[in-house]
Image (tube, rainbow, N blue to C red):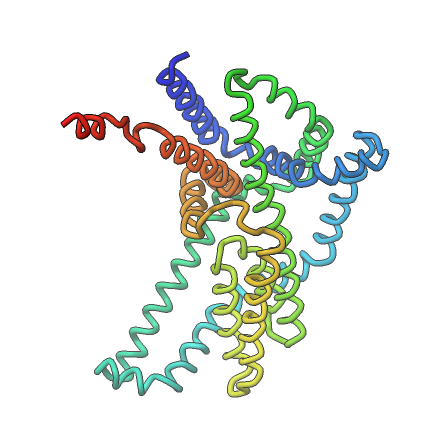
Length: 362
C-alpha cells in the first residue's frame, strides 16, 4: 500500500470514528464511563494478579470496592452537597445584590470619580453587568443540564456502567493483545512505541490529574468548611473537580469563596484573608507538590490546548465529548509530535543537497 493510500485509509477511519461519536453521543455515556473505569483500575487488577489472585476475582474485588466507595459517597456526601447547591442557587440573587451593594458602598465613589460618571450611573451599570452575567451563567447551566439530563440517568450510570467496566476489565489484556495482532506487521514496532507513548500520556494525565482533583477538592472543602464559610463544602469540591483545567478551578473557587466571604464576614478582614489564603496554599500544593509528583509532563499538553480541546469536543459531541477530550487531545499530541519528528528527519526539511552540489560545481 502506497503512502497516499495509507493516509487515505487512516483519514477515512478517523472520519468514520467521529461520525460514530456524533450519531451515538446521546447513548455513549455509560459505555465511555465504563471504559474509563476499566482503564483506571486495570493497573490495580494487574497488581492483584501478580500477588496470586485470579483475574476474575481481582476484577470482582476491585469493582466491588469501587462501587462501595461510590455508593458511600452518594449516601454520605451527596445529600450535603445537594442541600448546599439548592441553598446556594436560592440565595444567589440575594448574595449578588449584597455584594454589589457592598462594593458600591466601599469603592463606588472612587470608581465613579475615576470613570467620570455619577455614582447612580455606576451602580446602574454594575447592576446591568451583574444581571447579564447571572443570566449567562443561568443559561449555560440550563444548557448543560438539558444536554446531559438524559445521559446522567441513574439507570445508565449505576447499572450499565459497572457491567461494562466488569467485562472490559476482565478481558482488558486479551483485548489489548487482539488489537496488537491487528497492527500492520511492517510498522509494528513504530506503532507499539506510539501506543506506549499514548498510554503514558493518557495514564499520566487521567490517573494523575484525577488524584490531584480529589486531593484538592478534599483540601478546599475541608478547609472552607472549618473556616465556617457558607456553602464551603460545595465551593471547595467544585473547585477541586474543575482543577483538571489549569487555573480555572482555583480561579472560580477563589472568586466564589471570596465573594461569599465578603458578604458573610464583612468587615472582618482576617476571615476574608483566611479564605483567600486557603486557595493560595492549594495553588502552592498543586504547582509544587501534586502536579510534579502525580502528573508531571507526561501529556505534553499546553493549558491553552487543553482548554480548546474541552470546548471543541464538548461543542461537537456534548457531554461525552468532554469526557474523551483530554485522552483524545493527548493521543493527537503524540501523533503530532511523531509527525514533526518524521518531518525533521525527512528530506523535505533537510533538503536533498542538490543546491549545495550545484554551488560546488559552479
